[in-house]
Amino acid sequence: METQSGKGPHFIEQIIMDDLKNGVVKEVHTRFPPEPNGYLHIGHAKSICLNFGLAEQFGGKCNLRFDDTNPAKEETEYVESIMRDVQWLGFRWHTLRFASDYFQQFYEWALELIHAGKAYVDHQTPDEIRETRGTLTAPGVESPYRNRSVEENLALFQQMKDGVLEDGTCVLRAKIDMNHPNINMRDPVLYRILHRHHFRTGDAWCIYPMYDFAHGYEDAIEGITHSICTLEFEDHRPLYEWFLDNVSVPCTPRQFEFARLNLTYTVMSKRLLLELVNRKIVSGWDDPRMPTISGIRRRGYTPSALRRFCAEIGVSKSNSMVDIEFLQFIIREELNATSLRAMAVLDPLKVVVENYPEGQVEMLDAENNPEDPNAGTRQIPFSRELYIEREDFMENPPKKFFRLSPGSEVRLKHAYFITCKEVVRNDDGEIVELRCEYDPLTRGGEAPDGRRVKGTLHWVSVPHAVKAQVRLYENLFTLRDMSEMEEGKSYNDYLNPESLTVLENCFVEPALAAAKPLDRFQFLRQGYFCADADSTPERPVFNRTVALKDSWAKMQQKGQAD
Ligand code: ATP
Ligand code: MG
Image (cartoon, rainbow, N blue to C red; front, side, top):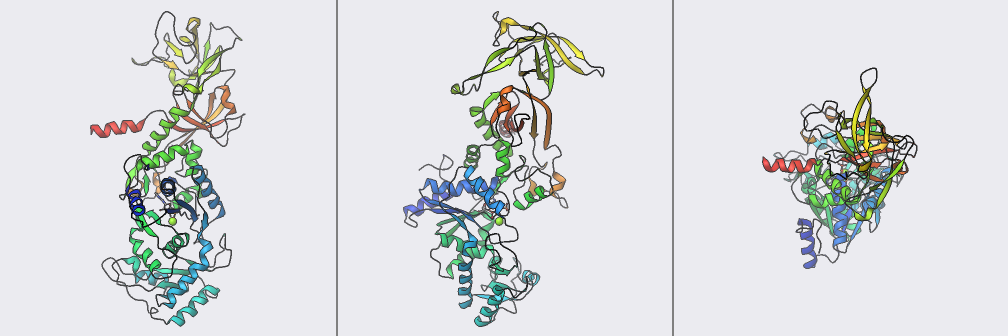
């Protein structure tokens, strides 16, 4: 069997292999259970790859289940974005489920617990319930309502359901053990009153189940064999099992926990991401700086790169922080192999080739991708007036500057050698133009006399170039580990003011005007870019996915040297 990492099986793969071998399960059935209260982030991608991946590997099934038990925060927009993101990642669900479809069944199981004397209606306030929970070292205190009769509890629960009680009047609690060493087992709340319109069930219900109570039952209804969640639920597992053990469920799923994904320089919580959107710190959930799947997609990442990233970081039981540079390394490797090359000048400086005939245009052959012999070639126009990158010229260069300077000769990629003859300034003393000469014998970039140049520059032809907007992105936050914010500070204090740079005056080769959103390119010597959703043929817009420079390899070398 193929493992997700391509190496040895991770601990969940091992558990499933053993379960299948020992006949504990016949077929693997997993689920991905997002709450539709926001857009998915890259942490969710890890869970998606794990759950859907296991079903694929072991010939089983994986459901997409919306855990829509809290009407206060959930919306159809989120449901749709989640479905889109899962599909974009390349996965197909076996069935699409909504926890809200099980509300009646949950209710009946709650009745079953009441009948068995295992649940009671508590009229304490939420504060009282919290305060009487106890601590790790002190036991909890039993509620004065704990020993109500079954009849009384049934009648009160009926009132809760009938809508005659206001929000917060009372709750239904499990009757387990207020002295339990695990605080989660100290009579957890099962149901609360909430007079809120639910986006699917409307006003049919005014009591809503709590996550711990509902989740195992959702799994049981769907026949889930391996219910996989993140480590913070490890302490909830005894409760998960208690709920399943104390009513007549059709099957008994088991819960397994793995470490969540944390990435440097970002936050991975829907609540915080929603705040960034609402406060307009970003342009929306799909802002290319967001760690959301939709943001990462708009930034130019591919589904295969995200899947490879999730496979490479692995699945384990210890929490860790993954360097954002590793994600960038993965996409850079893929785009190096697959993306078409193009020339784009982000900060233009005009070059006039004085000995090139005025009005002449010639088409030059340019390879589309030197890494891919099948990618073919394209034709790019060359003329007397060109743009080069302003930083590729220095009037008084230091010793090892191999680009253009007065009197020096460089190669224009796919074109000719040029030599700088004269620098033209405006009244403010700014350099506005370079007068150069080309050597007609160097067409294609080689000199017949074997003369060499050290620098090769990218360029575009002025009359043919298309003006474009280019957006450069940096990390949204300045703190490497956002869980280590200083006391009294909030994420606001760590927003990176330079996370977005918009360049309005860029020029790209003419073919790029036809780029459609998500078309990907390597801009030679600049990095990997993709056309943005805002792009039009009149005004192309490109997002920088990632720069060319491999900071991950550097970090690795440094790590080894330390
Ligand atoms: P958030 O705190 O961002 O809202 P959540 O856990 O509340 O995340 P859910 O919609 O409940 O979000 O999550 C759906 C699934 O995705 C769960 O099984 C959860 O464990 C998993 N998941 C969420 N965040 C991560 C993460 N950072 N790494 C791995 N899995 C995650
Ligand atoms: Mg959640």
